[in-house]
Length: 214
Image (cartoon, rainbow, N blue to C red; front, side, top):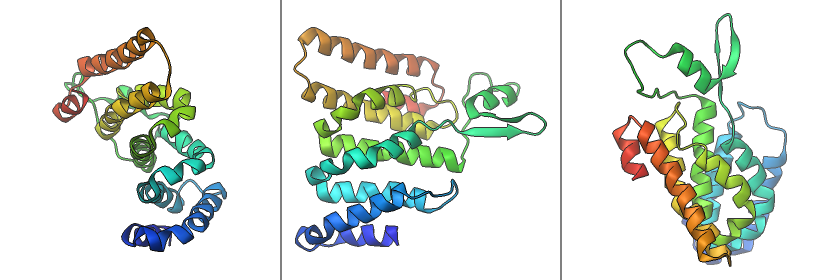
């Protein structure tokens, strides 16, 4: 139902959509705040649905960010886990270091789980918010920056590394456009972002990721 409604919203004209926009967003917020199981398919449907609604409403979507952002940031910062028989669950990146096949060297391993897929979708949604809403996302900068900068070397998924690197230009522009900081402060922030990407490139083993980071 969520997917169907938002696809229809994307297809109709603004004149048709606008009278119903607030009710649709409020209904989605109500669903988002409900207690959904970790494997509830509505979770992933909501993530992609918010992207469609944001792209449709553009700047008019900004007033809803305070209610929408917290669970999305939580999903984006999720630390996926994996269990090994006899040892229990542990953070996925730690498990991958333990079970890396001999001879693989520094090559990173791609793992697809529901948690990783949901995490990547949340990051893609944050990119849409940053690109479409710009400085309206600035109140969340202190949460967005550590999440995205910390994922440029996420060893379990090249999709997430690509998404995180791709989000940095829009994140920096959000900060720059919202600030009245000095030229020196802007230089310092740009240096932090650039150094993060350079460090990621130095340890990267996948050509596609290197292209995205560059």
